[in-house]
Image (cartoon, rainbow, N blue to C red; front, side, top):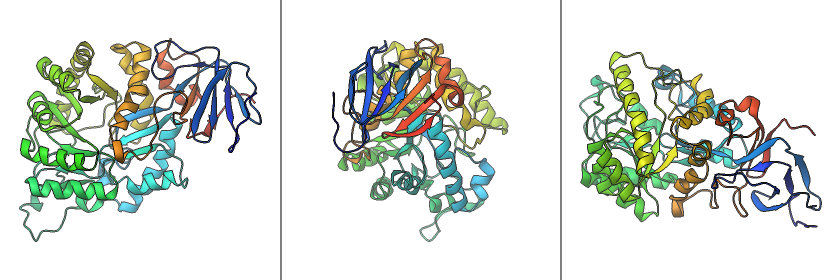
Length: 426
């Protein structure tokens, strides 16, 4: 009999276990949690003194899911509200959505742009339920870049010009030249960024930067990479095109965000560099971010055409890939988070799909090094790992579609050893 000291142990009994690494489930073991960590995978039926036992028979335990490309402050409000509402209102909506995110089984998100620091602190202090947040803080953008949300009438800018509304809110910071990039990156690190996000190319959710535009010189990118490295962390870059990706890799960027327009040589370069590819299933379907502007719609369609090829090339060249959604300005779209993960079964076996949002994504989170706000292994069910666990009704290794309906199929959700949902029979 195991006798535990300190917090009352939690024993999850009778389930198969997908540990976030192996392709086949573990059977004949049960998950023992003490405090916020996994104490052990004990033999089935083994008694544990003074434990709270949850019967998980008929389920598969998987690690809490990780969304590697999330915007907590911009996901659940329409774009017009984001542009016009009082900033405190936006934060309150984000707190409400954080609980919903957790109840969809996403126990960790990497926030790659936006003022998520206060939300993270409130969640970490137990004031609101929500996922662990790896915050980037404000997106660093050149003038005219993907993070420059000013209108034409706001130009030109001078040394005496006030910060834009997006800059004042902490959504993005405009920086031109190496010295200014250094300053803005260092400010985000001071605020508590676990990694830095730069804009290295055009995108869809902005009005004035063409999708194929190159943004930031290699020297400016190197300034950001150097400042982040001085603090023991890394830079990720928003970029779609091959030329932009190559420039980012040459500057030392370690995580490519999006990249759906990469050619095969560029994908091979990502693999050779050991860079991460944080990719989203942008398929121009019912789950796409809502866009009515004809130019933006055309860009969405171009990216969708590249998405399938990108997944195929990433698999072929064994790039380190992590799953993200990048849901933006879409209150209804947030419910698609797990469904979008399940779509990856078009290219991968179910175990690999789950790995991309568990064990693999945990490795990406750990790249924050000394700036990691949650030391300990994430995305795996093993002794000593952080205790984020979902009990899925049935077997997602046989039917990955189960994760697309968390309300019905996620019977138990545990984050840091605390139960946030339990619909299992007593």
